[in-house]
Length: 122
Image 1: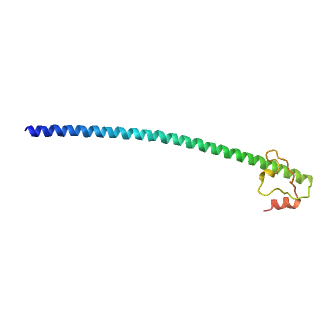
Image 2: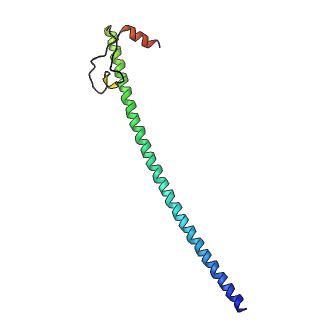
Image 3: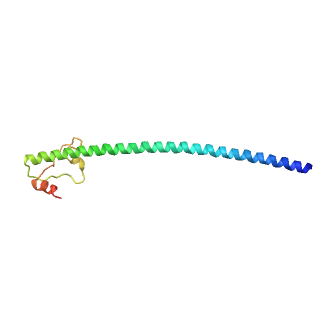
């Protein structure tokens, strides 16, 4: 009987130890989960800020390009009304050399009636 009582006590002691270990592991995992959730939220916020920055930057570039395009269209319209007979020429692949772009002067913008009629008929 004494041995049976000892085994029962050891069994209860082990059960308590297992329960404490399970509680420790559960708490530890919950803390890690909460930490991961906070990190996820921080990363999502950071990503949102970066996306907003990129969108704003692209929007500014688009606005600049639209403004430049409008200035070019006005310049072309002015030149076509003035009856100029030359071709529109600009440095290749150099949008900054075009009229109205960030206040730069136009040295080589010319318009011909032939090129303007060709541009209307793609």
